[in-house]
Length: 273
Image 1 (cartoon, rainbow, N blue to C red):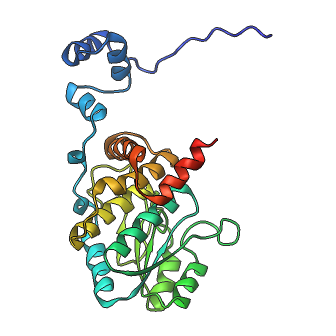
Image 2 (cartoon, helix red, strand yellow; image 1 turned 90 degrees about the horizontal axis):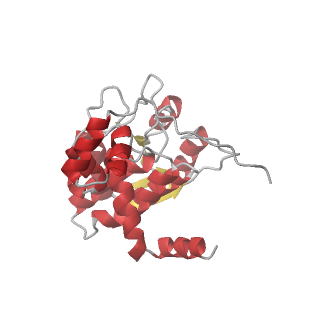
Image 3 (spheres, rainbow, N blue to C red; image 1 turned 90 degrees about the vertical axis):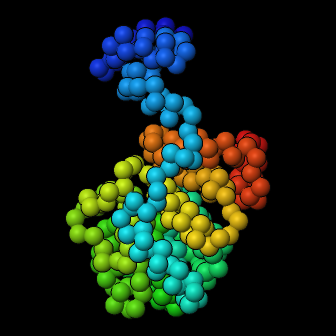
């Protein structure tokens, strides 16, 4: 058997020892744990507490996201008029969970809604020309993208020419011109004041869903949405800080006692391996 090679931990810009000792004293932590926190960039006891004890109260008001008001108004117009809505997702876990959240929330709100998940090989990534055709054939008047659409300027223009409105929910970096959509929800927009920029696609969908459910008056808790949002956030390897930390921690905790039949089936499959 080959002998193991001794390894040495090399820290980038390790925190000053006195900083770690201060955190240990203020929070009643071991020096080892406090040193790890200090080396991760936590500068104060308040920052550490926010990370270790996430709370729903630390979620940002969804209406701080640019175009959230426009998205909510257009969706409720579709709900009131019973216009067919199509949720157009992505084929990865982030996109599928975002599609699930939006479809579920819209159904709870009384919308006439269907969804479409593109095929990786046949359709490729993002809101496509075929997606516009699917929306047209389903007589859709409103498309809501999930985890895609921020670069679909031509496709959104084509949809608009055919009388189809589009709301984009995405988290990928805009490449320049934004789609001429009814609303573009993406915290990475240069003109978006939303303070937390690292939401996954399902995180952006989650913020929209919270507003739809709140306005509908239906009895569905934020905690139930968090369970699905947590799966997409973790699967997309989003940084587990800020709102992502709240979504992942509280959502994963909630999976231990979920009543959602789909989630229970997934958990049984995972636990059987």
